[in-house]
Image 1 (cartoon, rainbow, N blue to C red):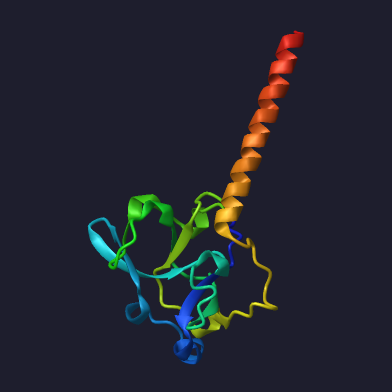
Image 2 (image 1 turned 120 degrees about the vertical axis):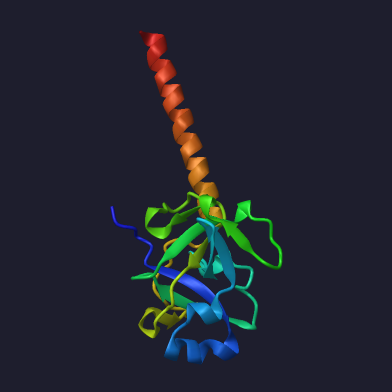
Length: 167
């Protein structure tokens, strides 16, 4: 089954947005996170599944870019497992490739883009009218999914026990 995540969201300083849309985002220049994989430190650009997943959503100093995921090397990690500090280094063992990620697997998913992003994949996000969001907020989606799974389990257990009693 092919992954359905086609867009992700990246926060950039307002003064940089025109150049980034026009010329692209060079990984070596704009990387802001790193992770260690097989003893090698790799760099990446932090992005989100939904624009509302970041605390920068209401920050007037930042603008949001919508990035098409086509042909990009992207990993997903659960930011709940990371202790936040100045030099963010993630553990590769707690990450998965975007194509292997299922929505709702992590409570606080963050994406690490490990590729240069070409201009044809970059769009300025419009909060009023843009492509529909797959999810509004990752944390709320995760919690709702867990509640539904628990309700299904309770319903299954109840039904199974009732059938077993009647035998």
